[in-house]
Amino acid sequence: MQRRKFIGRAALASLAGIIGADIVYGSKMAENYVPLALQDPDPFKLFNKDKEMVVLNDKPWNMEAQAHLLDDKVTPNKYIFVRNNGLIPEEIDVKNWTLTIDGESVKQKKTYTLEELKSKFKHHTYQLTLECGGNGRSEFDPPAKGNQWTVGAVYCASWTGVRLRDVLEDVGIKDDAVYFGYHAADIHLSRDPGKEPISRGAPMAKAMQDETLLAFKMNGEDIPLAHGYPLRVIAGGWPASVSGKWLQRISIRNIVHDGTKMTGTAYRVPCKPVAPGEKVADEDMCIIESMPVKSLITYPKSGATIPEGKKLTVRGHAWAGELEVAKMEYSIDFGSTWKPCKLEKPANRLAWQHFSAQVEFPQQGYYEVWARATDSNGFSQPMLLPGWNPKGYLNNACHRIAVKVA
Image (cartoon, rainbow, N blue to C red):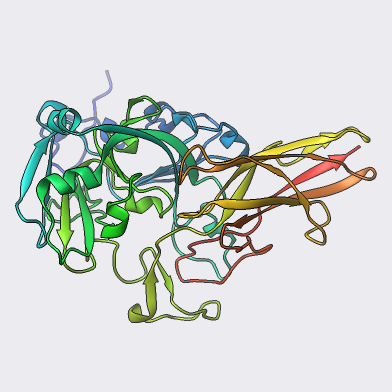
């Protein structure tokens, strides 16, 4: 029999540091054994995602859809992008889950159980668009740091919950309240319990909107763990980072919330245009609020081939932050001319809108179909990349697909 080799002390200490806890019987591990905590899980099974989703990062988990996966009017879980700043909570005790409302500008600190929230306040359901502030970051030049999202960090799901406004009115809010900030159960990458991975928020005007929810259902079912189970904020039309997951506490502030990722360059852009690569002082950065007008072609998949003389059905979605999309157009000549698309009204405020068009091509060859949305204030998507910013936010350039007519 071969003698079994055991892991050495130095290697054991290194593994324990990565895992974040002592490996109690680590001295009995075989030298070539990899602890389960360090074995790569299958994110598609872990999060119930389609195999065509694209993994951008695993520490923390971040994955996006491809454009053609987002063809549903209401996005199913298997195509919803995952964006985490820390580690997903490891233990969820739903029976004892509570939400505390506190801060300088509450008349009283108050704590609700999850069941109290569900039973005391009226339930509301809305389709709401959530888009990562960095969606499209991969196109910036010089490159911007962060996950290199292409176009798939956006979705529109049906959310059910209670209005944040109703809960705040029950608590009592002082006249000096200007902002809310959320605090959650996710774990900092360092596993330091004194650090929050992210703690963002929004002005009180956003908190008091009808559509700003404390949600506990997504698409009619319990919210999946990766998307904030059992309770999260949903603030449609703003960067998805405002919609905090695994919600445990909301602070009502008499100042702009100063939690993690509310300062510096995080979810901020230069208040005035800057040259590509230019350094920008913190005081010259403005917080991203309503997302800009944007659209996405979801059918057909880029690279489609169609027979000569046949019309191509094109469809997709458009959204405009707090506004409504007023006009949708397409171009097959690289933006030289534009033709109208059929545009549907949103299911409710802050839901994306669906568009379609029957596209004709004059002859055989290679084409690109470009999509351009215009919002209710008259602002249209730029044909190419908009103004550069240090973190690669707010890329709302026209989406385009390749088509070959043969």
